Length: 621
Ligand SMILES: Nc1ncnc2c1ncn2[C@@H]1O[C@H](COP(=O)(O)OP(=O)(O)OP(=O)(O)O)[C@@H](O)[C@H]1O
Image: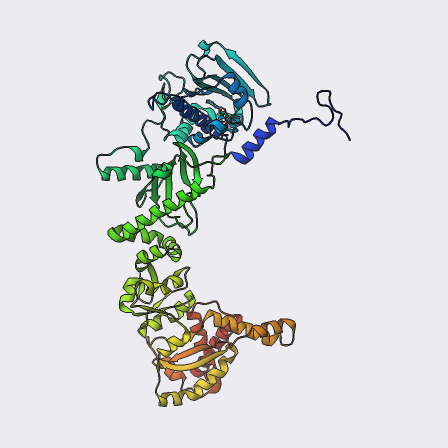
């Protein structure tokens, strides 16, 4: 089908895109803005940008010469500023042209960083709560220009008319919205006041709020200040202690927890100031927290993750920066070189705080590590400096209980480390009775970190604990005992051959432990693979598994000659009972290792228990 050309557009002529404003607003409200409440942030931000432009025009004016006045009485919301204002031509160019912003114009390119807005779409957010935007403005750049009135409607139409100067005697702009009934939630006076405080409490220009009651009926105004005090880090305090208490109290007010400590942030190069609050409790590793980011005082994002690296999940920050660039939604930051540099510099500040605590405040360091040792471990793995500073202080699970590596290395010049929690559980009691110092390397980062201990404590050596190391530390029994037990050991080996398990007799403490099953997870996997390969012999799968087969290390059941039960067991001359007792000892040692049991092992435990019970009952009857 060919569309007929209208007379205004001869065939082949260039045409102009039409914009369906309703569709565009719908898109913004569902995909760009998190909530209709952002309309107030956008209006306040435009007012603040207009003040910035006015100050550039009149540099000698004092900082509080120009301000912003908010008004909400339940039926209208008004934002009035003493900013640079607009002429009729400006209105056509900027207000009525979506995507065009005066803050991006060529001639002010060098000043662009002074403004928060730049995309030319922020005003559209007003359509989230109202069908019409009413603007009354008077230009400070062209003081003799008349006042101008613009009415923009959600259907895409607008009207402009000029008014006598008396309609707005002083330069500046007033934006008035009459919120729809369905937007009442965002336009009630108390709500507008709360939103204004939320977004604007750190703004540097005077911002006031009026609820239209003339100060008689309502809690605000006229002229109640939204930002009565400068940011807490910009105030002066009588003592450093008073300062840090005030910053901690602010952190608590903003985040709802009492910080373990408050770290001041100050990066003059990007005009950034703020605080990082150290969380008093551990958070799951890798959970990133949103930080509150203000740009030129205006709260843009409460969920900005980008300003700190991933490892810094033990703090939440509030910062106010001059030259970070928000994205169009304002809810995150534009990833550019400045943001990368800010992230690095803030990370450096956090490291410096850790270093200071390590060097001069052991109590703070201990409380910090108690809550955040996991975060610090993840950091130390990649950060040599943190590793050097903090590795000796980090807690580990060892055969001497939970202690720091430094404490542990004082009594164990050779530190052995297991590769899994399960191996540690198997050997801990026996290794410590044998005088070996073992650290549980099974938790994330731990084995890697323990192996790096000699970098900072060269006198200490670290080795992986394998079954052979442990067995070598268990005392062999004398020849005579070994010979006397030989028959029993042979029967036990035969009974346990199905589990690829060897049996040996040693003496070790504690004497109450009858047997120790020395095995490693890798060895077990290797044996499972070999077994599968044997079962599938000849098939394609069997060939593949067979090709992968290595010399599978065997498990070892080490019987304890010091244990009374074992002493009796090795003298059993009844073959069936000897087998059953060996199986029972194996089953008990496997259960003690707390690793998951294979079905064959569970049924072995079951069977040996019943056999032993039957044997005991037979004997009694
Ligand atoms: N209070 C105001 N005073 C003077 N000019 C204003 C005011 N509000 C809006 N404008 C003009 O209207 C233009 C469009 O505003 P809008 O909020 O849509 O976009 P922006 O602020 O430029 O960019 P962004 O989409 O990033 O907010 C602005 O660039 C500015 O020229």
